[in-house]
Length: 222
Image (cartoon, rainbow, N blue to C red; front, side, top):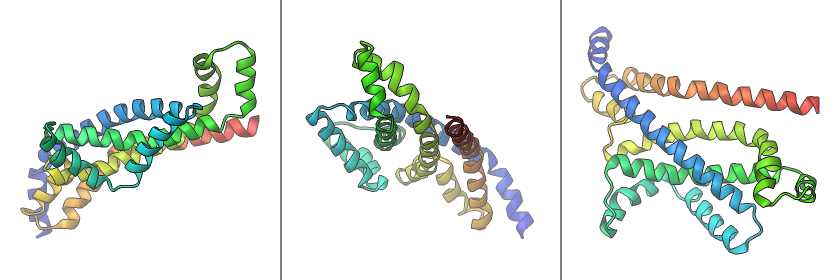
């Protein structure tokens, strides 16, 4: 019986590969958008502007304090009622970008705030304006603290992208749900889904570990 189901699963393999390609596209676009959003909001959050810090804090707290499932429902079901129709792919990318941006904002702000205040004062004493202080002095030092958790966040985002299947997007998770109706061996079907996710995430896991080792070596040599 297992051989019979395995053969039927092999026939469905092209659908799984198409599904993982959709997952990679959604995740890749969201990672780019979320990184840019998180970088900008994270940097601005460290500025001593009360209103700006307050608005960014509200954005981060709302996104982090609500389930991603609710957020994607708002993008896919509620925004069209307000005159902003989005296809499933666009709703998935937009909601994941917003979600990633909030988490990356926290990582970036934390990395910047980990740089000793003396470095700010030294850069200011050198005659640098705020932008030069950030670009030439603070960000290069903060990157060591930002990169390991940032790559870890990428892995979480790719795994969380499986939720987009609830709005009918044919990502690899939804392909699995549809396939298990024809190949009623859940362990075999979702084992394959898990393997495909692992193949995408594992290089990033290794990259995160590499950054952590580099950071540990740098700290021990200082």
